[in-house]
Image 1 (tube, rainbow, N blue to C red):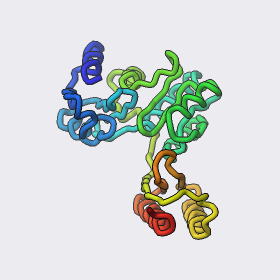
Image 2: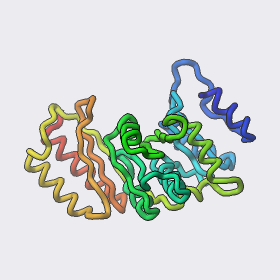
Image 3: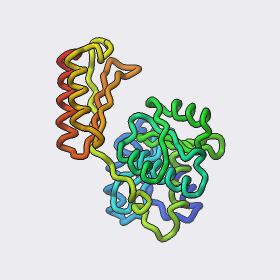
Length: 262
């Protein structure tokens, strides 16, 4: 992808500024790519570029940067394509697939566009399963996996970028494609734990969860789950304000650490 990406873009007439495209076999994703989009955001502004594409090592994830230097992740991309496909009558059932990690801002924007979201567990395999079972035209993850039913469920960051460029249209700023998406502040803390008991059976944790959910109401959410592969408990909170989001997330993470910390 470090070689093919720039060549493909140039073949479509783009002027390309290459960043992090000199691989040595050891420096994959080293400060660049889909895992580090902020570095590209600075370069987009420095060169007054129209569009930035961040790919990961195997190219299946795409994170994008608009002309204002704003990072647009998988949730922003799903909001754009979900709304557009629905207007075109190309979104079967008016629904798409996304994981529990998707931002509440995406849910609200799609709801306003009369698009429903089938929520799956984390992992693109769960998104693919939902798409196959229900015939959805598109699905994806916040992390940049965007899957299109075209061409046998293609999931490729460069392909997603090319579709964005084609659908936004010539002469329109990239930022206009994401105007409907307003991200809720989100914080995720991973707490190392010594074991993984049912969290609902621990009174202080269950009580704190109920308290936070009542405090957030419809203007935020709490996601609490164990990692499937590591001894970690993931605490994720979204809220309208960053200060509230950070405070509640840190409070709950501290409580998990006190009760179950490794």
